[in-house]
Image (cartoon, rainbow, N blue to C red):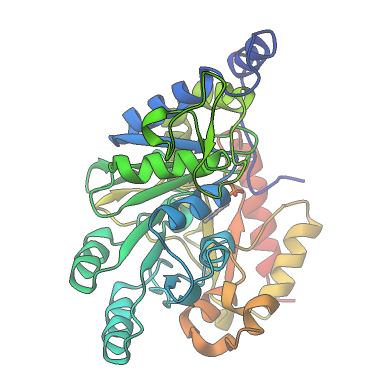
Length: 387
Ligand SMILES: *Cc1c(COP(=O)(O)O)cnc(C)c1O
């Protein structure tokens, strides 16, 4: 099976992890701060806080923005459930903004219209999670303008987008948002096995996320609410979690960062080749905003089902039968049973639903060979042939 995504591990990556295994610290040593410095410098952000997953980073980001009961978080329905669940963890309610049918990202026009209605009803959101689907940046300028106008905070879920650029500047520099979150799950652009990071230019936000990542415990006398009892002393000053990243993960992350630009360039090479090879087939290839540089985590095609005698599902099944590990990113979050139980209806977000009825993620990862890519194309051509 050719998977839709997979990690690329070099001997240098392995050596970096083994070195940590033989060192004094498996956790809470020097590698996590090093990984944070490397990512912050790469993105042009002031601070970075490494955690055990992007899901944890999203949770801490919401808490640091003081999202709580009675507040609202909005995001796109076409994302992984974690982009929305972080709001629920904080006791907030979650709502969605439909996607732009060209970029598949949250549509700024739909956002503006929904904000106008919410303002009239007194139901404005406190936090918006902008997801850079497939690595293509959202229209952050428009989102940033609306955030100022309506007074909400912005988290970029850049789980697909490390190594990408928006208007010539690295994703994560925080020009139009408060916090940006990355994922280092093995299918993502670089990996630390499991892992995530939140970057920000705000020291207060970063300090709060650091505190909450490790039980809400501080050893810094300045942050204690009472005078220290002695050198052994620590204080729990907030209710935090154990969301720490290990030294092994951070060492792998630091090593992978050295190849980040190469990985993304290779993804672009593969995407251009897909674009060419697919031009004769009845599919919509992903539109790329000429003003930005996508991380290209995913390469999603949408079937022109009106031209096919097979259904989307049949094409998908035939691809899997031919050993192509295609996937579907994503089942719209509001249609998950957990969300339907909150009162969402599948047709609440019609653009997300029509995307879902045609989308297929083709294999996309740096180690994908030309031969494998040709195999994907011929399997797709075969699957779409009229029966
Ligand atoms: C993968 C992913 C996450 C969650 O990442 P983890 O590191 O697995 O917790 C969140 N949001 C999006 C858009 C993702 O693709």
